[in-house]
Image (cartoon, rainbow, N blue to C red; front, side):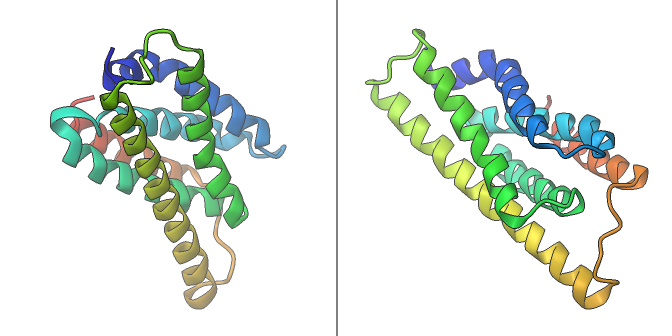
Length: 173
């Protein structure tokens, strides 16, 4: 089985496990963010699948834009910069756990190795993009604003959801 097919078949499980691990880190009082956070993580997993195959270039571009959104949301959630990195890297851990438990994938196959290296590169790229967005938003809040970001209002959540829906339409998800 090809890695893309495997990812496609496991994307719901990957999302559920990743979300559970991120949600376990949520501080009390941040329950209002759970819906948008789940949708964002679900979208990121779907976008990652689209980075393989014919839509690779479009998938990678949208992956980068979506991880940028993740960083912007993370600063509003009040995360520390390292926590943003940790949360995205949890995705790598989740995928690796599922791969190690899978009998459907031949880990010695060359195409698997190339695909796994691609996943690692994309997650690293996502970490970088999310970190950049986090630092940029924090910097501009301090330089141009009050120094404190407004949090996650309904309008912020709706804007993130709108952008994710646009990305999904572009990739026909």
